[in-house]
Amino acid sequence: MKKIRIRLKRIFSSIQMKITVIFMLLLLATIEIIGAYFTRQMEQTSIENFQTTIQLQTIVTDQLTNQLVKNGKTADRKMNQIITDYNNDAISEIQVIDNKNVIRAVSNLNDKDRVGQLSSNSDVREVINVGQPKTMVINSKKGNYMVQIVPLTSGTNIVGAVYVRASMATVFANLRNISLMFLTATLLAVLVAAVASLFISRAITQPIAELRQQAMQVANGDYSTQVKIYSNDELGQLGSAFNTLSARIERSQEQSESERRRLDSVLSHMTDGVIATDRHGNVSIINQMAQDFLNLSADEAINKPISQVLGLGDDYTSQDLISSQSDMQVTVNKGTPDEMILHASFTLIKRVTGFVSGAVCVLHDVTEQIKNEDEQRQFVSNVSHELRTPLTSVRAYIEALSEGAWKDPEIAPKFLQVTQEETERMIRMVNDLLVLSRMDRGTTKPDLEWVNFTDFVSHLLNRFDMIVEHDKKDPKTNEKKYEIKRELGNQALWIEIDTDQMMRVIDNIMNNAIKYSPDGGTITVRLKQNQNWVLLSISDQGLGIPRKDLGKIFDRFYRADKARSRAQGGTGLGLAIAKEIVTAHGGRIWADSREGHGSTFYISLPYEPMDEEDEWDEV
Image (cartoon, rainbow, N blue to C red; front, top):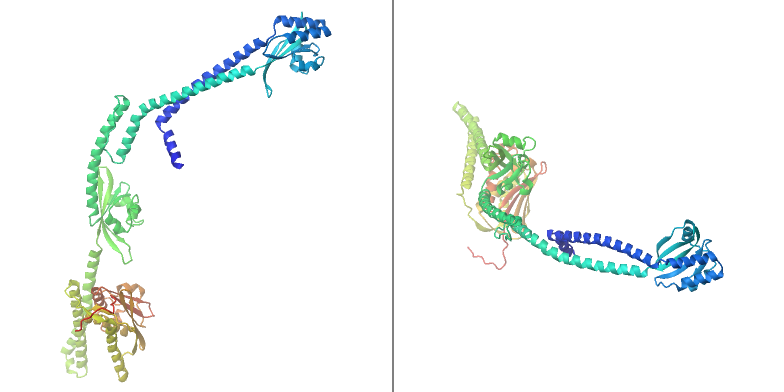
């Protein structure tokens, strides 16, 4: 039903149908005006002719007048005889009324009883009083009829009136037949006119419809067809001009499309982000790389001010950026792990006339560059600082010894011991730096072998348990007392690791847990298998790590408590080396901690469950 309504609406909204309807309405209006005038004139003429037909002859009215003057029953009988013998098929009733409004004679035998009674017809009294004849057409439920009342005068005296009523059924029937014939002729004329107007309007609108269809095809990018030229009139000239225009648009479109494809190819394959704006500073074009840099879609950027898109806030306006054309750095996702630093440079887009129509902003990712520069500066600063402290101590003690302290049997051994400890500390630091350097260059590859990780961790913990037992047997030792709690399970978890490197990772984390745990604390080691990963966690009951420092503890030379770490002989490189080793094994290492509630370090390594039917070669 909806499709039918749409179809009808489309048909009646077409020019062809409008021309047809207008032509039919004009013809119908003309015929109706003529028909109304003709019908009115015909009706008046028919009524006038009918009025003449039912009018009593003068000889009859004279006879009736003479009998009214005589009065008496004889005169009444003669008047009844006169009107009864009057031969006129159109007249249905004749009454004779004297000047006293008394009915003296009637033509209808059924109304004989009314003779001698007063007439109740006010029109009869009016005619008798005024002396002017009166004719009326009355439409009632009983039918349509004409009443004609004529006064009867004798000399100058009105002696009465004659009332004549005639049915007009035949007259009105004839009028209806004529109107029906006129209506039929009108409908036939309108039908013929509709057919003729359809052909005429089609001849006019067909070139327009073809022109419209061609325009729609051109709008959709199809330039293959041409408008057919039917004549050399205005419509033909319009069609020829449109064909020329279509050909020119096709050539221009091909050139524009070629340029657009080249531009899209360049923009999509650029490693830099590109943003184009209009002269008001609103974004009009943004490539995929810029969307990735700024973490937004094209719909979120188009028609937005470039200062808003770059996240500059109220510090800059789009007009300021375009007018100044100064380079700047934009930080995206500041304070998050996805923080990115972009270098933005601006260039104006000018027309031949010099009018500035917009600007182009090129975004270059300098995050790694700046990060590397910062890390290099920080690394040099940290290495200098870490080496300067032991070197300063060594130099001071050597100077003291060279100045004579070596002669003191009590002081000299202590100075030499400190010098040896600081030298060993520098050696450990240099060795750690060499290890990190080899890992950075990729020259150190893990020597992988399949190991039952549960037994491997248990074996490492046994060494620490032996240290605990030894310290308990020697009451003179000042070592920190601690307890190791195991939650390893009994499942054999076979994974492929470099045992030496992984031992170094676990030893480092365990040593840190022992260093930072309070005396008598408990260190909990858990081992779980989760889908395709093995998760090792080591928890202590120490002071914990501030939340803000959790993301930095794996950086080189970073210490949450620098004074305490240096006093305990740490180099600040252990966790950085551990992260490099775990990453080389395809795993992850992270920490969770709260100040005052201890810390937990997690090591996640890839794990593939072994079926019981897998065969192993014995070594």
